[in-house]
Length: 291
Length: 289
Image 1 (cartoon, rainbow over the protein chains, first blue to last red):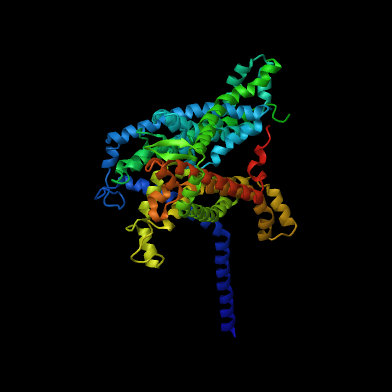
Image 2 (cartoon, helix red, strand yellow):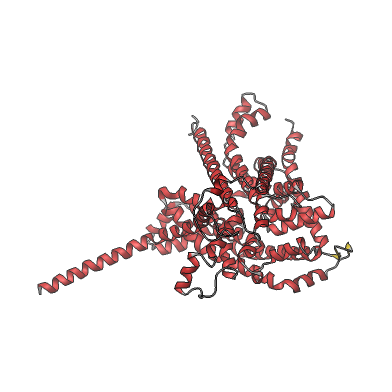
């Protein structure tokens, strides 16, 4: 009798342990799933970093043979790779400056003004983002071919600015939409001319958006392969170098530089977030918040 | 400022940027259209004479790659959605103080070069890799076959490379959902599943629509994954266009294919938006502040 009751109690307890485990699993299932998805996103990055310390047996850096830091100390020892990287940095820098200036102006016009032709303007900005890169690269090449423009750094710059503009507009516009106009009005009431108002009030306030847009433009440009492949001529950018080196085996230094770029972007990204938080803090210390 | 001058201000602001887009985006499209109707070869030179048969010839030669591109992109988009929705949901509602770290992990792949990320997948899926060993042990991959140079590898690569484009819009739309709506659903005796189906899911639809398009469109035109992870049997229309333009120099055929690709994508997007609703994409940004 008593033994039976004990077994029953034990069964109840065991059952409840099972139920509890089951409930825990159900509650956390989505977190576990998310964790696995995040791991999936990060694994290739880990592979890139790990293989930058590899000492491959042959030309191909696919199997981890032994650990070495040689390629890190020799990171800039390959002249072709260096010049490709420099070209990419120069190109991305210039494309960022031009596209950020052009895109920010467009965003200001779209958010601030009512004007005739807004619809077509919007369309022209959205459509490049909905166009596959091959089509964009191929069509630009058609233009350059028809006009006999020699392919090279200039055509690359034209192409990169073109595909960056739309993204800059979208990012800056999203920041401008929540923008409080009263500070600008106050500046104008105090006698500031439009240019001074823009320089002293508008620009500092939209700066986080502009910086975010510029970072995005830079990232898009330095990473671009498809459009560049069509319009580069003999100019070699970092992604084009990788593509070219693929058949004969990609040097480990590429992984080293990719890791460096990753770390630099990490820092830039952190800086951008910090600056944005700071701007938000500055914007929130206004005395007339409640009005 | 006088009224007339003030009315001109937006045009001064728009002018340079839009001019750039007209000259280097819209005009090239026109020239590509012309080129697609040319006859001739590189040696004899090309001349324009409404050669519509270019379209027919190009399509009948490369229909396999065409269909394959849409198939790969469709499968990759579906898988990306299956991975992204729960992930975005977890970040928006369950992550707590981990939220920023998780968002950061989503964009982290963009901090490395696209080609190198794809090459990393080549390492992961190569015959010597532990992943492929594990798959062989489990029997998912035959002991004599590999993963590289198959459609699986190409689709896996595409899925990976465009996954962040799927996660971010879905996250953004989930994040915007007013918590009071979910409370109201609970107060009205909706089960969690029902509240999800009737409140959360419809409200996150714009994100799903945007994410699917942002994944599908670049995926259809992609040729990097097929080049690095596939064999010639897995080549997509992007590979064909690139080859025709840069290697074979058959510009009219390449231009015709590009045009058809663009047109088919537009049609697919249009039909999709018909079902999903356009406000999903435009949403709050449609009107100026």
